[in-house]
Length: 439
Length: 195
Image 1: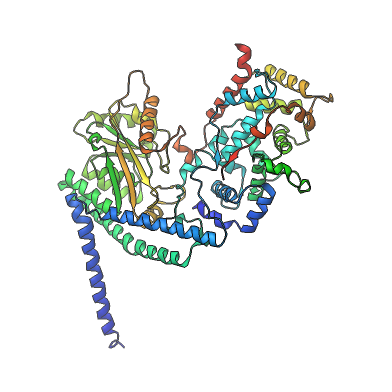
Image 2 (image 1 turned 90 degrees about the horizontal axis):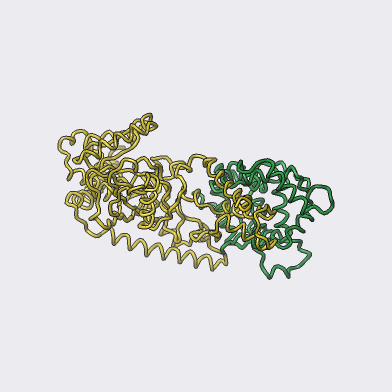
């Protein structure tokens, strides 16, 4: 029985040996060596441009396929489903009254209800908040099943291409990234702690970045955060940390997690002083603020990296910044991060997918392409309170990154909106009703 | 992965909804995607909680009344057909529709039906007339705590006095239509849907 298995066995071993060597060489040459020296081969940009051309071709094929069958292609509502009027409550109601009874008076009119009615139904069809918590829809298909809406229009040629894509992503990219990740974690492990300097710290993050096939463009690096300050950025995914940390050293702030995240956190803390909080401590805002102020007061300590939104948003908007980090009174270095969604969705929908699921999706995408803008440092001005300062920083980040600037709280992802906002609307309407009589 | 939802809607269904509501094919698929993203329970129907999760609707003083308008009498779930039927009231009125075949029945977005929708927002117990009590309750929803009971009461009395023509101290639908005959209902109760 064994005699004729023997030659196959030998062949198998040889094949495995060769593929392992090839794979390891690839890992070394393309990921580790350039990361150590901080150079780039330019291969990733070439890869990116090739992918874009393929995506455009794929979309054209689908459109052609749809036209042949005389059906319609689903177009994502990137321009919105409806066009909204930006007029305020007072303006609209006065206008309605004027056109109706010709008086424009302050008394109640039965047509007032139309305003609330229309606004309400408009928000049912398209609101500014709930769509920020799911992945952005794409104009052209990027050969990932998870972002396809037109299954029935895929021709054979396209299916072959898609199959090839799956093979490449799960057979080559995924293992490559996984091993890259393992190497990084090893670097961070206890054994290296006494030898870790700034250079090695950066090298580890760069390995991570290359392993993920992340193509990052840093703009305005002269504004990079310096010691004794706080760096704030908009939050889209856990990858934000890797992206920023591969271009500079930061002290992280966050809650102590369990599981995989906890292991990584503990490993990181041995490398340089990060600030991790117990969940119970987070509730005590004064304690948090004190620890942060102590850290920034020490000029030798690294700048703190904070994500004031408090949760992951889908990178089409910037939501309310929590004022805590803006109360400390030191220089704030704003950073805007914008991902290109065509190559892979970086947004982590934590209410729908767990960490492992998210990592799988992310590691099997084509690439992570993003732009990072370092904005000039800002400090709190005279007579400005923390909330106004936070809004000013938020507006600057939104403008630079091309994102919508929203006042809504990112916490609405999980919680209900506060009653206070409804009361404000009611107050506004009451003013319209009786305001005229009091004047 | 709510975007996959468009493939769950069959062509025949789309055609039927098109006939009933007048929305175009692409509008229907987009609205289905929206319906699906609101449907957190993924059971093909929306409950009141699904609507209340929209922050802009939750802060609307008449949010609960509007949500109620989507649900037929006594039911707790609304499916996509029902959703579209209610939204159809807010379609703008197009000129070529006015010449359509009269035997096809009144379109959902006619002036009359728009007014009926608004009337039903006031008419809490669905008895086809707005009593003083109902008007007061709706007014209270709109102003919150900012106006006193007496002031609100007098506003309500004045409104009923102006509208009531048959002296029963309630506003019927025809009286409602009369009061609003000069208001551009077609424009105020329409939403501009993009194609």
